[in-house]
Length: 341
Ligand code: GLY
Image (cartoon, rainbow, N blue to C red; front, side):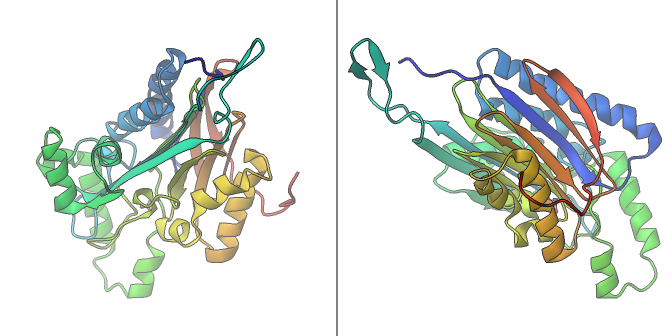
């Protein structure tokens, strides 16, 4: 079956949050580029956007400097509880219609199959993003959590690891340092204030040559989070969204991202604005509604890219065949000039 081809593109983020320590900047940059390069190679060899975003996010999950998979932050009890999600929109071609010399596929432009999968509160799976994909492809559900998600992983043939194997020495040391800091009495309001996002939730969005559009996000959550807390990265529409119009992945304070359905709102707004403008507006609206810190990456079906955040810093890696692979540290948005272009 013939299909209209497009030029692929991918954007990955390594989280918005506190300024990165100088000695970690180079290593984070290398980690971002290596992960995005994996996704870019998949797209360049004709692979799907879904394969590309999952490979990119899985590589970031394996990196100890990112707050996902092996590098995940620990919850208030010193345990690991990871969240991840994927969403995939791919075109469904209609039957061929011959008109003179022309062959058309009437359904191609608007007809997309859309599917999603997510996991929450998992601690025994090396790559939560792969489990999210398995939920999407191999279960009738969208979100599985905790022991049920891990049992499903085992039934899918995934190896379960001991939770201790997933805790990096860096994450354990950070948790101890936080506990020392919190040894004094901590009022609930102060605890809430301490739930500031920290660098490292990871995500990727991509479009492939067959116009498939995908998004994936993975996180260890926010520092100091309570046992059982689920963040935006497990919630389709909040931390992850992919649709006919484009794809988005978010980072930052999950409660604010969930309250504002950040990724779904941003993708739907692509009907009226460019990703660059929509990303800035989405973050500005999130600030107005919640006063929190967050970031978002956006891609539309025309392969235009946008990103915005209001944290101290955020890093992205982007790929397209014309521009190649690039890494950027993004400045926070200025709180003016929110008019649509
Ligand atoms: N954005 C990551 C979280 O809040 O869990």
